[in-house]
Each structure stands twice: as C-alpha cells, then as structure tokens.
Length: 147
Image (cartoon, rainbow, N blue to C red; front, side):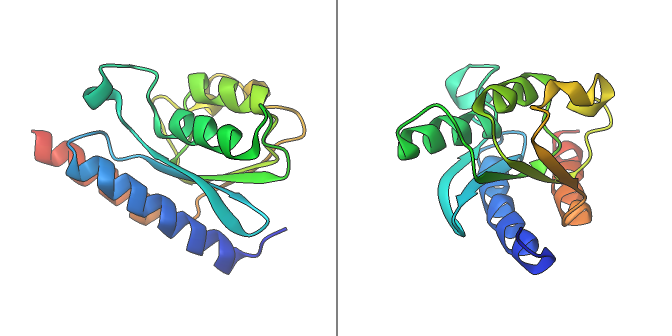
C-alpha cells in the first residue's frame, strides 16, 4: 500500500485536474488513476462543456484508465479524487472493481456514503480526507465566485 506522502502527491495531481475544471467554469473536481506508482488516467468535470450530467471527473478517469489498460477492470489501481464520489460514480467504480479510492473532501450533500457504503465493491478500500481542506477550499471558492 502506498504511504501518506504518496497519497498527498497523487492528490495534488488530482487537485491540478480540479483546477483545470475551475478554470473552465466547471465544478472543480479532479481525478487521477494510479497503477504501479504511475498515473495512467486523468479526468476533471466536463458536465457543462459536454452538456452531459454523467461527465464527472471519475467517469472521465475510469474511461481513460480502462482504455489504457485494455479492459473493463481497474484492479490493482487507485483512484485519487478531490471530492467523495457521488452515488453514480460509486456505482461505476463498483463495476470497475477498482482496488482503492482515495478522496479529499467529504461531500456532505451528494456523497455516496450518505446512501450506503455498499455502493462500492466489497473489496474496494476507501481512504478519505487526504488534503481534504485544500480540496474543500477549491470547491467553496468556486461556489463563492458564482454568487
């Protein structure tokens, strides 16, 4: 298992993706998928640009990661995402059989854990709160900017 400094390193990469979303006036959520210590996929929210409510950062990263690996499963991979996944993304992550999810800020309004932790595959490990304050600050700054 990766140690905490590595979790912070990869979460910073996810934060860079979230900043891209912020700069594009998208809800600033970013994600990276890591396999064997290297990033194999990146994603950030594209729901506005694509007019697609399913174009979440996690969904973009899942599609890119499975394409990179040449199959539909993300076993032995870790998703780093700046915000706790929503139920839709949790369902997609379930079907991908991803090994680990590391998220930054908890989503108190739409996070999957509000419904059930069973939305994820039973073998998926979840670690929350990595750089949570930074991830949450980017999100709150975005919504302040909108007001």
